[in-house]
Every structure is written in structure tokens, then in C-alpha cells.
Length: 303
Image (tube, rainbow, N blue to C red; front, side, top):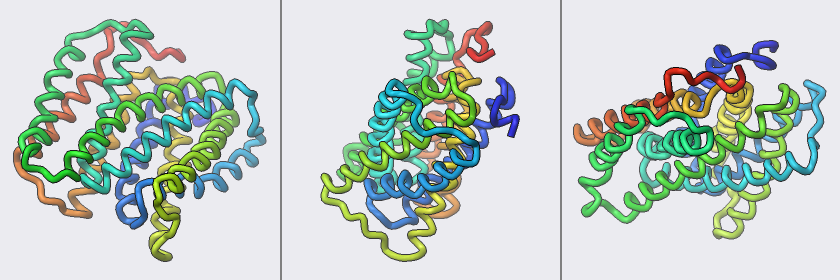
């Protein structure tokens, strides 16, 4: 418990790593649940609330941390809703692996923040990562773009849009969690979950989707999605993210698309060409370059 409360830079990174591995299961749960993209986002948040509120009670924390924190949580919830809605729809259109890989272009959002806001030095790695990522993206999507179905094209656009919302959410969450202890971190996650549940509920209603769940097996998948990917994973990430620089967070979160792609291959066995595999490898390499484009002297902002 002490490691989670105050992990420091080294254990902080380990916690983010563990959280990223758990989150790699997210797209698998989304597909297996059998519900719509917006409904799966709603149930992810709604079913996570009892566990988060129970953890908050056990740690003796309080939910209300002031109007400022509530405002930041609302902004985070808007980004999170857009992230989950776009990502879930792209998963249903492209499959878990490809949708998650494209969504993790979020590292370039984090890198841009580090360069323009934190004034991190622009390194050759970051410069190289941009054309490499374009090449990888072309091999995955561009070659078949003109002959691909409308669903494939929409899925690619939604996945790339996800990258912006995901990167923004990670940055806002990092801002929220930096100055809080474990109780405050859990309280922030509770507030985000409450607000995101409300917003995603309106999205389901506004889009004309249904809240209906096919059966008991679907409820199990939705429950696993909420507890494993929302509660456990994000508590681990929230505990470690304040001790890890944004670019390093982007690198570690690379484990999510790698894991999702592996799960996709083994569980759903989609048709994959050599060109697509080459594009995946090149894209992951570009994400890696973008994530590790720190200057030699950069240190964790938390010490």
C-alpha cells in the first residue's frame, strides 16, 4: 500500500506499466460484450462506480475536493467520453488490435505538450518519429484506402481522432493527480467516473443506441471491463502517473496497443497481410521513438 501511496519515480513507472497491461484487455471486452460502442462506454463507467466508491470509503477519502477539482474532472470527463466513444466504435469497425494501435498516436499529443508547454528539447528521435509514423500508417491503411469499405475508412478516422482525446485525457488526469495522495487520487477517479457515466448515458440516448445487454455472459464481460480496465488499471496508472514524465507515460502506454494486437491475433484471428504486419511494426517503432524523445538531462517532474 505504501508503494501505491508514494511510489517515487521507479515504482511509479512500474505501476503505470502494470496498469497499461491491464488496459490492453479493454478492446477484447468491448467486442465480447456484444453491446454498442456508446453503451459499452456507459457500462464501463457505471459498473466501476461501486468499486471505486468502496475503495474511497476504505481509504477514508472524501469525494468532494472543491469546485476547481470538480471543474477539472468535468473537462477530463468530456475528453474521456469522446475518447471512449470514438475508440469503441473504431474497435467494432477495425478490430481490437488495429484500432488500439492507431489510437495510441496519443504519444505525439503528449510529445507536443512536452515540447511546447514544458519546453522539452526536440531531439532527433522525435523528428525521425514523424515520417516513420506516416510510413507505418500508410502501410496499414493507405494502400487499401481506395478499395476499403466505408466502415474501414470511418474506423481509421475515429481511431486517429481517439488519439487526440486520449492524449488530452492523460494530460488532464496527470494535472489532477499530481498534488494528491492516494485518497485524493481515488476521489478524482470517482468524480471522473460519475461525470463520465452521466455524459455517456446522454450519448447513448442522444445517438439512439440501446442500454440493453444481450445476456449474463455479456454482463460478465462488461463487469470485467469495468473492474479490471477502469478500476484496477487506472488506480495503478493514477498512482504512478504523477511520478512519471509525459513522454515516459506515452512510452509505457505503448504496452496497451502491443497487448491489444496480440490479444486480437490469438482470440479473434483476423486476416493479417505481411504489408499490414510491416506497417504495425513500423508504426509501433514510430510511437516508441516519439515516446522516448526526451533530452538526456530530463528528469521526472516529481523528483
